[in-house]
Length: 362
Image 1 (tube, rainbow, N blue to C red):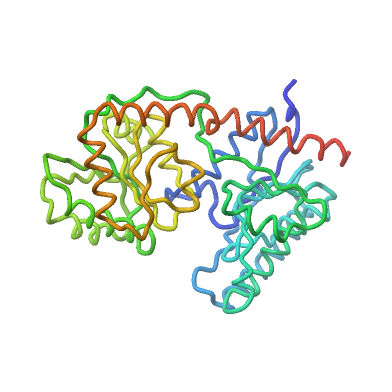
Image 2: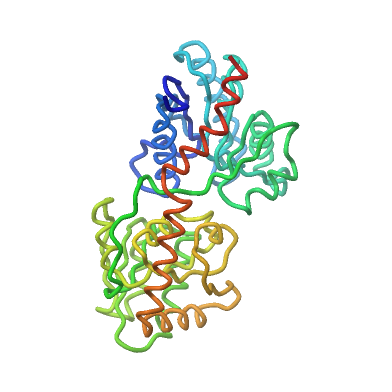
């Protein structure tokens, strides 16, 4: 019998429901978590789709969301079927869990968080109330699973009591690796097209491409409200850049399997599921050396943000000119994914951690 057999788990993601129509890394990770937890034999139920998210630091918005959360918590305390555990994904200062702690306490069940962050710098200013709520929710968690070493820094510094902090490496929703790419196609970029950090990565890509010579090609998978801006950035490169649009999982796998390398600078990425996907197909990655990315990239030479586009271009040229180097890095990447970033490893990590807590709570 698997450790989760017969258990009923309540799952909640305050920032974005796993059922949300808009694709994103956050939605994908929530879906993957529900699948990995249920693979332990448990029944995982999304108990609420109430979105608690304040993008701009508006205290009136926060007050309104608190009222909605209070009503939702009361509903769940009253009507939610019996569960043995509450799991919240992605509690942070813009999207605090205002529901889970109250329901878990009222139902006398353990409360667990996955990918939570503490931001003491936000305890003053427009997000102060929400940041405090995120901290308070962290304090009530029996376990916080962290995905990156960068998140661990503040979680460990402000750990509450005997709370456990457990590393859960980001993972793909598969038991096995896909077929490896022959690494002889175009470069591939995959990223949502929206303002902010995503658009900043596209700006950096355009600056990088401008410094390349030779017969290169780049395919871009993705779409979004900033597509026209991204198209304008890539216009100087003409037919060398091809826009693939928004791809489903099967189409994206085909894009990876036909590419020679994966290019995405990763401006302020938490970690980035696309890196795991690309490396599972054996693609060497060209990205910048950033805190979240270090947890999901195979060992290699990744330039710092300060080195700018010129060094990214040099990395691309090195890989395009050396098929054996591409193959070596791709092989190392696949080995890393197989070892630590597939679903069975995540399932084992989760259930080995929560089973003793569940046993103690009964």
